[in-house]
Image 1: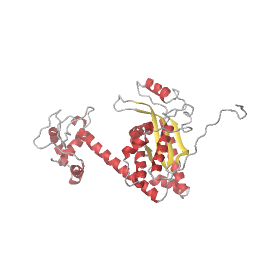
Image 2: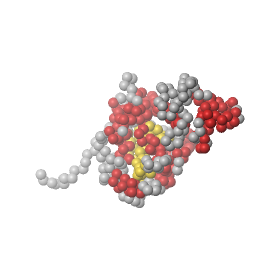
Image 3: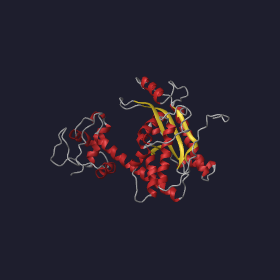
Image 4: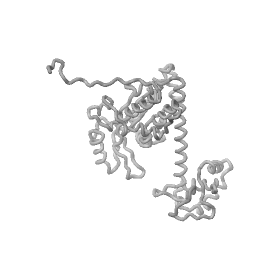
Length: 368
């Protein structure tokens, strides 16, 4: 089956970059793009020529005309059209391939992190976990608008679990999209158990500053604990430390979009958001020979909807009296507690948590 040449990939890129060309056929594009292609140097053409070997795209078999609505044979890809939202099928294909490669790189990075910490017996290396709830997500709008509500971030390590002191909990003041006031009010009062309006909530820029300050301070403190003086620790943070926030893989895209709303755009988020399941699977698989687990399966094991654990005294201050299962602090607590239980089955030593004993409501001098 023939592979498309570099000129084909150049045409699709021009189609995506030029709105008035998006409805053009490949034949029309060929006429429109020839002048631009011929003006490129060999070096400028090389990235498009390389795509022939990396894109995974194969054109329909020679002599076979693909009719609209006709089912393609295995391995054939019709990339000349658009989806229902007007997006280039070619760009969607490349985006999916790029995402797959990105996730593979991150999975390998997490595995290397686990190997390094196990070899150095450093099970108190701190990571960060994040959970953000929403007042609403406008599924009907294009693009969707994400309205973040409660933000919880905690430092954790494999041995001790979630830190009781290094944690952040903040509530965002809702920037309500037009027509969604009732939905935000209902979600706030009925699901999130927040009064509406919630006067303690802070605007996005204040929450963004709180998140940045929290992560920077805890990274510097961690460097100091590892033997660096305070000045050197600050320099390390500023120069070469890219902070990673871990979240559940099912929450990852929503978490990124929420952070984008808080920080004012995806390109302004000062952290990477990665899969907690990748990290836990990296630790688990390093200890097991014949019982490997995929990141997908690990994600199912960690999902809070499938975990039943005692969360007494694990809610944020606002939710501790409402016992709210949607509390973001409680959810990330479930993720870490279940992750440590899974790693314990793989042979890791973890600090046992003290059992909570409720205070007696019976007076000491009460006579039965």
